[in-house]
Image 1 (tube, rainbow, N blue to C red):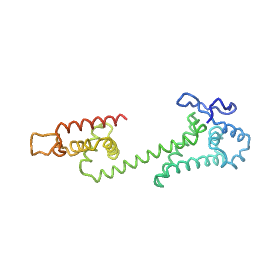
Image 2: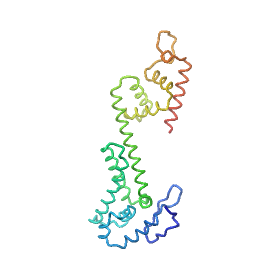
Image 3: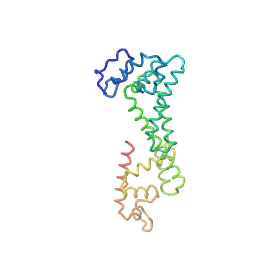
Image 4: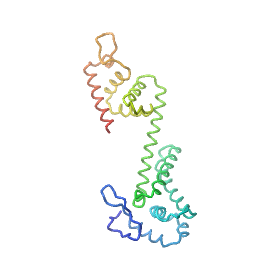
Length: 253
């Protein structure tokens, strides 16, 4: 995309949204040129050739030429734009199941409609970089779907488990008093934490916090984390301390 100084679109509605670096979003020169051509044509001609009109130009029409009442031509152009967004999102989500891909596509379309007709300058991004914005939003929705699926999977695993895993999940919720989370979500958090630990650290955590074994005991017949893992009491404490540091770092992220 060219620099903002390279285009002259004073005759068009200005873009007022600023990018992260403080500069204004701007339309590509080819979009400006197309807009001028399109705005000189009758509405019926625009509708007839809607498949050849760029998405950025359709966005401009949706934002700035919307009639008081939604007429047939406006609805047709909106449906064309919505169809493009839906198709882009669905194609991007093809790695998911067909139903999940449709869910992602619908979520992106709902978000797009709300942003486009919000009346705020945040919709400027659709005129400046339409494809990029839709793809980024789609990727965000895909992450949400995958996280939701993982939580549901963890919830099923939780219901089928009666050992240390269940105890650890409940322990996470005890640490979140006042904002208790669903067990599936707590299980997802547990999995994230355990994935950060070394095998030995994970064994120590499961033994002490999952199975409820003491780190050490003066009773030689008592099974402790130390005796189960075949390491010294000091080593168990060290592993737990390291695990706690990793878990804390994970929560801060």
